[in-house]
Image 1 (cartoon, rainbow, N blue to C red):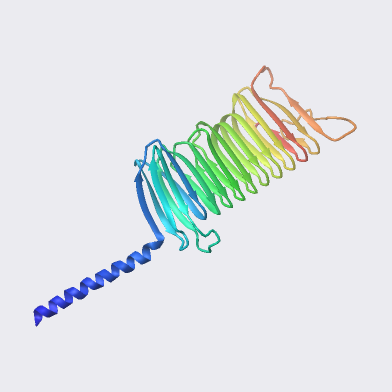
Image 2: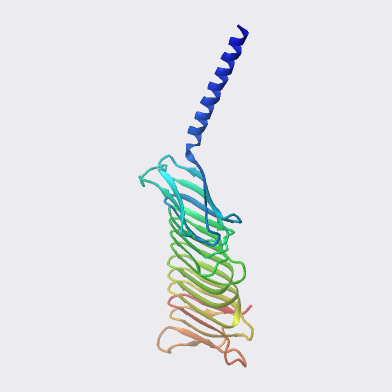
Length: 304
């Protein structure tokens, strides 16, 4: 009789364990943890319709996707071929209330990364290769080391941090602000409806365009740097220095030109609006040159 009890107890325990395992699988249906081998210097393309995309560079030659999926997410495709790895969140019903996918993607740190997101925030850290980060109705925040990188947001802010080395970066936003820090080399910023702030270090080219927001430039230029910025209905603040000083051509149609370098401002015409300022660095035939122009905004220029 005791042997029967032992057998029954073991059987019940096995059933309980089996039931627990089944329940665990059901409860974990909203989670993802998948990985695939990838080239150390390959390309990783990531797309997500809604939620977040968090990219992390690591020392492994594989791509790993972890996170949580909304009940309406059909699946996450993960495939790699010919040096290209694709991570794609598939959502059959875009009108679903629970179609968010909150994913973290670990990639080889020297990868070239491209992210496309809709109604999703994008972040990235530890990636050394070129990055192309795009979001519609979401913010973009990233540490950027790769040359020829770019970030774009429609209805969202963009925050990029460089590594202090020469590179080329292009950043744009429609209805969002830009915050760009610790970049050298070539910097281009465009904003339609939002402010932009750039902190540069040894930049040799800066281009900026703003339609209805303020643009602020801070930092150091190389001796032969070129700066070209324009604003329509926003102010321009320039706090820049360069070895040998600055030369500048500044114009404002219906705004003021001011700052510690704003000496010798003159009117474009004595019969109409408009002011301009021409600066020549003392004793320098060539050097860092600035061109700034606004339609209905002020220009504030200083070298300290």
